[in-house]
Image (cartoon, rainbow, N blue to C red):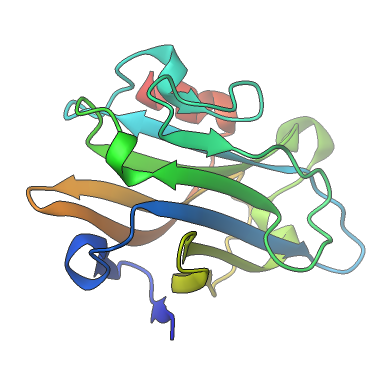
Length: 186
């Protein structure tokens, strides 16, 4: 049975799921009736200084795979109307470069400013981690608050600890679009 996290909740993957090596990170959302938005998932693989070790460690719709082969984006879903995960990131925990301390999962709205789109137009947003080999959901974080006029959202983080990996359910809204996040972590 999957663990349901609340905002700020932490889940020690290495202690509670030691066999987990290959994970699917699924992100999903549903536009409120009458709205159509194109959301994009990005992963910032940052070092101890909170910055990308190299530009290629920014995984998104135009760079689908990290240079270490550990993180792979499966492609852009432009509608968010399908049932289940709207976008998927595959993560091989054993392959993550030693220079990477954290994977930050961010969702932004494509052309939000020019289209007048914002996260308040969404409902039922979530992030979940699935054990690929065991074919079961390990944890889930439902973002159950209204994020109003935010243009971007940090859904969660995978943080390297001395003993392995911990997932943090962050749920932090931002007035920044994708460029703002790139400027923060590049």
